[in-house]
Image (cartoon, rainbow, N blue to C red):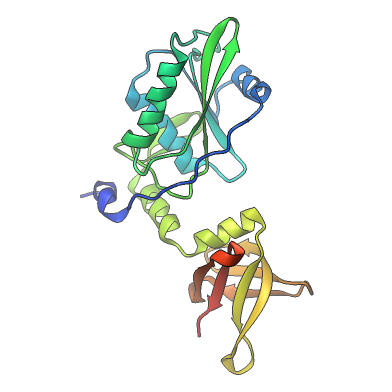
Amino acid sequence: MSFADDQQTVISAVRCPALTKGRPAVSLIDRLRNSEDQLTERKEPGLSYEEVAKTIVAFANSLRDDQEGILFIGVANNGAIKGVSNPDKSQKWISRIARETVFPPVPIEQHVLEVDDQSVLAVLVRRSYCGPHFAGPAYVRVGSQSVAASDTVFERLIAERLSPLRPIAQALDSRVEVLVDRRAQYGVLERVRANVVEVNAHWILFQEVPNGISFGIASDRISVQPVPSRESLLIIERA
């Protein structure tokens, strides 16, 4: 049995936050005019639900925080506008795929663009913290294509999901101040406020607030707890 065959037993469903609406249409049209790449996929009308699910999953599993993938429906590979005949029906169909076919569900945002007197559907996907996601196999983006993840890549996706480093990496990306219980003299815990400077498999580097003193803790010596009242984290250095 491959690692991916056991995906349903290792991954539990997670409620992911919805995406924020209101993206300016002009930037989507700019992306539409560009060629396909790792962040852009074009599909003609009449595509299958497997193609939609595969692309959504590949984007959700591959994007960084500062990226967004866009699936344009109603556009040929060469950029020719074909349009979709019923945008409202198409949006409901896409939403159902992202919610029911993909596991765990992927939050998406949809826009209808009017281009050359045709309606084109833009489906936006951003980095997911609820992955890895599946539509049968787990897909990732390689260049301008969505491909099935190898067992090695799948194991990495699982490790990222389960790792305590993930919320710390989120704090780094969001520039959220955290609380750190670090080991001081004689092993006594000392609580400080800090910003996360770097996160890797070996070390987490912090900068104390407000004095700016830098310090590090080995990644395998930390535990993480949420601090809901501060919308932050408490990072504890274990003995």
